[in-house]
Image 1: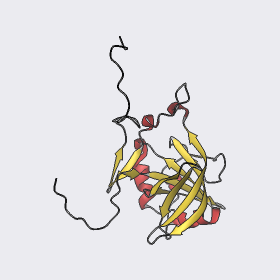
Image 2: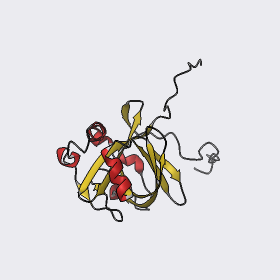
Image 3: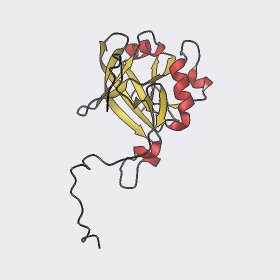
Image 4: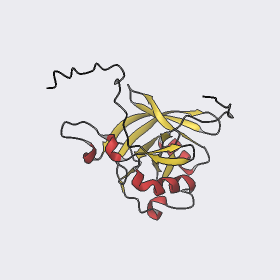
Length: 193
């Protein structure tokens, strides 16, 4: 197929749409972030990139910690609202009737309406341009019990997680195969009888 050269930009889509919570002193906020990702497995690390003018930026920089809350499609309105309204102007927790609970390790709150919450501590901040990237070590992961089966296997597909794709939100729902399916040996049909 013919391709058209497009202007340089952030075209690595889809990306997760997450709610990042932070707190410092009595101040607390929630911010939608789409520039978030996995950095390392051992130790477990992730990154979030935030514009320095955002209210959450200073809360995270001063506290050195935050929580990445993974929202489901049922709160897509909340995700959008938290990305377009500033915590300087409105208490988003109160306005959106979001319920919080204490993290197991960090002081930033966990959003109860999100099925997964990843607690993280900042290791470094990289000033990249429009956004600064917070590299952080994952110190705890909180998962709703309904997502874990009787064998202890995590089923994130049950969470109806959101992603952001070039200006639009989508849910993640259909699997096309598990890791390694391209090289997996086919089961002998005769053995299955």
